[in-house]
Image (cartoon, rainbow, N blue to C red):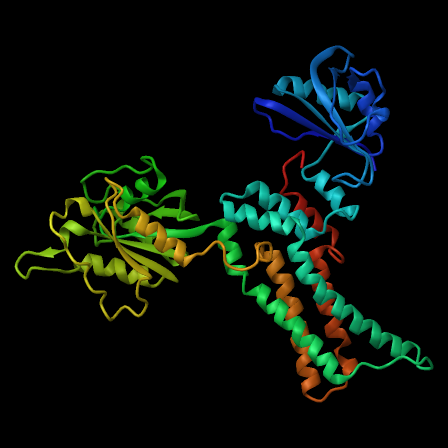
Length: 468
């Protein structure tokens, strides 16, 4: 392989900038760009120890004072000779140093190429490589913890037991068939069934995590629904911590969906403020209402907001929903999860009971809370309700399937194992499940990278930034 280099700390000014180099010519390239104060040549510098020196541009002029650290193969991130240059984080200075590295024989690293080399050199499997980008992109502490555990190999270890069991089974079959004269003990039928059932249990447990893994990584798509002036935009602003939406007392102010990401109870919510649900002749507002209904169909969670100041029936003295409120509740109840939010609690004056949910709604709310977006009262109760719906600490960290590719591979492996089990339980001889066993192994191999096609590998690493 050739020698690659890239800026690892981005293109904005920072206190410290890092430039990475990897490949067989690392020492030779650095020797022309870095001049140690200790007067040694780069290859003589002690590995994994920072050394102070001058950083030179392509003409050999001193550009900055910085440090270098060497990571000889195979004890490096990529598994090959590598190094890092640490300098002041001036984009101009780092660009000049990078140009000097190119002039010395390195080339620009492609997106994700350092991690791809780590994979190709056996330092990481594909699940760990995917965890690198997940850790970089993590938007919540829980997502970061899961990615870190997956980077440590938690998912790979969970899968290796299944893969090794299938490998042992297949190799035993082939040994008996290929060497009939040898004294090789045949596998017992009960032993085969037991192994397949255990593998099925492991993969089923992993598949059960894919929904939670998706929400942990991508966030909970949350639609805020209610009639005009119910307090939807004010709630989004209160949760976001700034005025993301325009708020007025004019009904129909929000005419399109407005999106914002917030942390609520430690859960990442992709909030969608929708147009007020009502019958209207205004063409623009009508389009907004239709978009609101579309947003609700794809939502994981709905926050059904009703105006607390409009709940009191002065004549009867009890709280009731308006027809428009009820329409919003029906739409919210069609989501997998929903929470009833009674807004404007600071303006209600007297304590108004939350109305009973109409029995016609087959899906009751997970919680009912009173909040004031103006004072913040009740927002902590809402956060606790969201946290209870989407716990971030359930299960084993690192064993969540967070990517559709992972879910597809595990699903295909489990389907193949179940076909094999069904064949055995139908009375067929053990040798007929060899095809199913090998199909399951290939699917798991795609997941970890043992049998992944080049186009799959390239697609994974194309998601990375340059320098990683």
